[in-house]
Length: 203
Image (cartoon, rainbow, N blue to C red; front, side, top):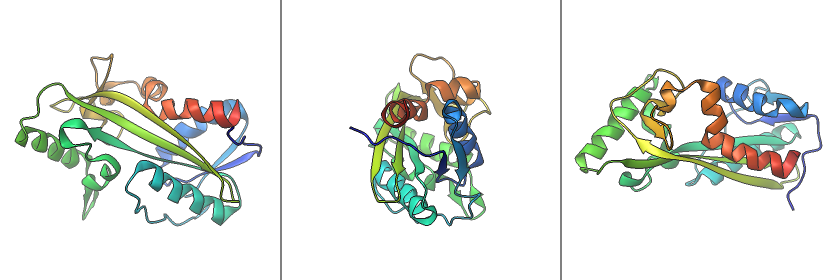
């Protein structure tokens, strides 16, 4: 039996404005006041886990302990089968440069690695998202989500973020980068995890 959320204020352990907006939209029917860790001036904890759930737990528990409020975090990334599941939890790390994150460079690197391996088509992959809701007493609930698809080349579309222009979800002929953002949000790995979260903690 999962623990229910009973408060009226929730901290989202993110410094990403787009992610906050997406989560606030998903929670809008529940009359919850959603505030980000950035707005509360919380430092970003070191994410040194080796799985999505470990990193999501680090962020959620840090925010819950710092604020005394229930905190929600997510950790997400793309797993590519021909790269043995990489980049996985290191999805954002692959984009790091001395001048900030460069996802075009990360996508190019990904394509070059697949080419070096002569990876057969379709190059199956999935976007993964793990949501963790943590309470100040140390309890947490974990909700994993996934969206299967394939990695394509060249990049297509300038919408979304991260690796969206090279990810074509199953059942679609367009990439996440070409998709209307609200359509993407409806079918995404985060939406899959959110359906489980809402069923477990809110509905």
